[in-house]
Length: 25
Image (tube, rainbow, N blue to C red; front, top):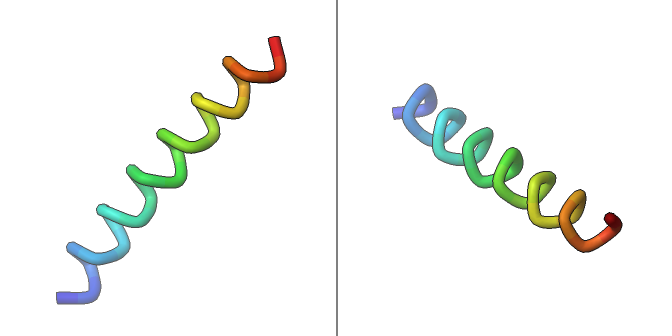
């Protein structure tokens, strides 16, 4: 299902953003 894939991808992207923010600060 495309919706499921999008949800997983979005969640993964948000996680990466959080990690990047932690590394920057």
